[in-house]
Image (cartoon, rainbow over the protein chains, first blue to last red):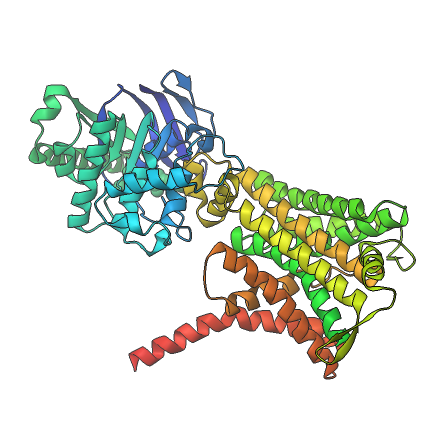
Length: 270
Length: 309
Ligand SMILES: Nc1ncnc2c1ncn2[C@@H]1O[C@H](COP(=O)(O)OP(=O)(O)OP(=O)(O)O)[C@@H](O)[C@H]1O
Ligand SMILES: [Mg+2]
């Protein structure tokens, strides 16, 4: 169970570049729930995930994950509970290191790391079995640097890495956005498999309405740092791409009206 | 021939410096100029302790520890106060200059009549091969003690290389390499990257101080100036090693740094022998590293131009 209450985050506070990236965001996500996060560019989706992962400390509000208050915990400590896949395929893996080493690093996510060898025979066997499930033929290339692989292969491996030790929460930030449609489809398939098999609590940012409609059991839509819509249960099941698109239009129209009102007020009073 | 053996021995001693530079520059991508201070720091610690009558092995080990502390200071300043790596290193290097003067009490400590690691090697040679024995090496007569000294240095550097090779394949060591490669990723896997950087820079400077302490014992004195230019020297060694060994595996890269250090020292010895002015040494070393840094970029460009034409 993830409970966010009244989260605020302002970037570049007090300067002309001030951005209120999160404004009074409250959200609670039950165990095993798969939530898709939609929203326009700059609406705060990545900021929301980064806040939960601990990339920065929020200005206000609390973050509680499975009863633990992690609001002020540094990122590396939260990693014990949280698995992550980034938008950029380069972000989730260490390019110069081998596939095996990358996976073995993930096999100890949030655990104590000692002076034992990282690639023991048992770990290597386990790795092979896991990588085989991807059906990408990577199990015979565990020695080669992961940087030589394609973006799709790297995202698939990052998914495997983030879920190796079952995370209490899985954060996916547009993890298929940098891939071609066919590869993206494969990675989404794998995502679904991993999430359902592990019954993982998942927060997935996406720009694809289709993905949001097909996947998961809840959709939230963000706009200007706030959660504007939240659909779940039967309501979510009935959602169609067209419905989502019209909601986007509505948000945009409201923006324009807001702007026009602001202009009128300005003319009136300034 | 004696000159050649002496050069190789110094090259092996400076290979420890190259290993240190390899850790900071190549593993962490951390341009760490603390090296210049910690090289001298190692020398001054070892020299002062030996003069005070401490066992040379203990003195050398404490020099290693001293170097680690210096490196940890740089890593701490960088990670805790977000000061950029180069400036953090400059701060600690500058501070170390005063520290070194305090440790030595003057700017130069002679070790000629002292018991050092190298007098031990000589005693060992005298016991095994006989006093002032001469060995015939492919037609050249060489003092046996020089050969023994070389062998001991070789042993030390092999042991250190193996230790590093082992360490960088442990769970902690692999996390360190990942910190230098992609810190965002390894943080998301639960590693405190600040601690890794502090520990890594400390390890690097430990080796550099070890190198300084051994050089002081070999040449028979420690001098407050002896660290100047050592970072670029180590970098030149690492670059030569990389050029020789194109393979990217950890073991080969470590071996490359060691071989590069010995080779670079030999090149310098030959150049000096041919009449190069020793005052130009640092100028030429810097020029060499500059060329090595820009050459790959230029080669790529010319290749591109060829493709376009
Ligand atoms: N580290 C940062 N420093 C300053 N501003 C930031 C930072 N991160 C995000 N922002 C700003 O916060 C706002 C929200 O950004 P965020 O990345 O969360 O948007 P998003 O919803 O993920 O958009 P996209 O769909 O383009 O990924 C944007 O205006 C962005 O410029
Ligand atoms: Mg984003």
